[in-house]
Image (cartoon, rainbow, N blue to C red; front, side):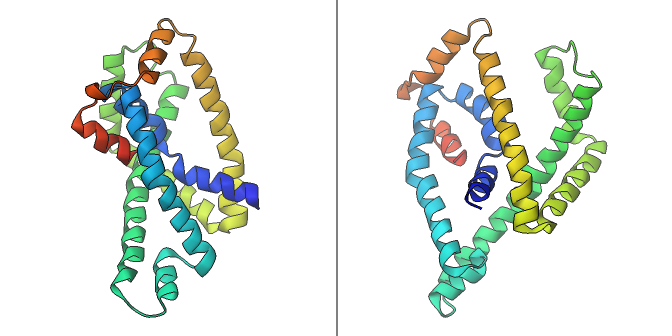
Length: 215
């Protein structure tokens, strides 16, 4: 369905990197200036890339690798684009979904059992380091991999679309709640002004690369 496609596409684009890593990178790389660079990268790279993927999928009705070969009609060096894309997705899923997903499940357990209650920011940072490198986190990553496999094994309609129709609205509600909560904290107005006031002279060179990677 159309709404299922929109939710699935959003689910593949709005990852943990945007939710978890974006705020820290924005803080370290100039706030509003980082946001401006990010939006420029979205327009110049993100949107064109998205349209190319849509066009390839609609025209060929195949995976990126087979789709490139079909559109060409013969084997040419351009087929390597499909292979490169598939390899990139495999690497991203192996880390961003399986490993980081395992960290997330481990933290859900810590939160549910009260292990993070009363900790200082430094103690929480230390807890993150211990959790990320702990052997038991591998078990949580394995659980995450199984959940992902069950979703994909259900197919597009009963798997991906069904899961996204539940999780994406839930994520939206959580994000709205976090936005409201963060903006009523002490000093929120100053932080919001700093974030939305761009000063390109304060963004470091590595901030440009960091903003582009977030797209």
